[in-house]
Length: 398
Image (cartoon, rainbow, N blue to C red):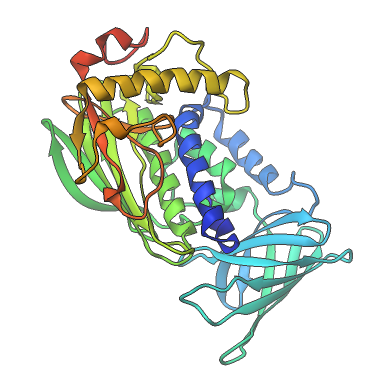
């Protein structure tokens, strides 16, 4: 989720969130790549902050007064820049808008938020790979502090208190601003038994995110879970107003599959709070995060999951028609609201990109559209027996 666009208004944020749901559905399975050596990963980390153009763009670490901060600078136009920074002890985003000048100076102003009336202005000068300047409070005590920053490098990533595993390192290098938030170890939360198997929930301290690890699973499986753990924690810390509740639960834990059903309520700016589901299903044999198409093929239309392609809409429309027909025939309504029925379903109501998870009884599908309250939509459970003919060739449900 990208909340850095919240200052453009609620309508813009709603659009970004819908895109995030689409991206989550079809790109999670792309997050896992072949492992490479730790040395290569750390060298790549240094390149992450230096390959962007122009040279001022990148992720910087350093101090604001006596406080450690991380700042990301991005050029939007010749004289327009966008930036985000956070205090490392907190990890929560503070947005900046501003201008850049040809002489390598930047004037950045904190974006006003409903719960924070005091602003500050940052004036920075680029010298090589370093930024220096000042932070000046525009209201209140009118405090002024010096800023000294340098571009992040391999040593900054090596110092993070993250588990050392290939998939998580890959995520770290692709998301340096997010990864640098996490310099505190995880804390043990509840220990739960699900279907006779132990699940250890761990809390990320800055976001208070609670997410599971599996005590008897492979290292690759827990590596995959950690990638999701820190992605979710990053989403919460990007919510600049600190009003984000994320509640996951295990809906299925079998010898082959783990499926999580998570709900989130949040207010990160705009007119209203919102609600969405962010579900996750993992193949415990391959450590692969699954798409719906890994389990079921609902249509013979050629599968095309690239939203920019010509065949994408054709495939999605065909899949949605079959899915809606199954909901109408077999779907068991969950969380229904008075006056609504399955007959009101349509192809444009969010089921073209449904969120989904698995239970012991079947496949639960739900509209992917964000809502002001959770009761604004229904979810439907399709019994496994109604889906047998649609099993994908290598479906782990076989």
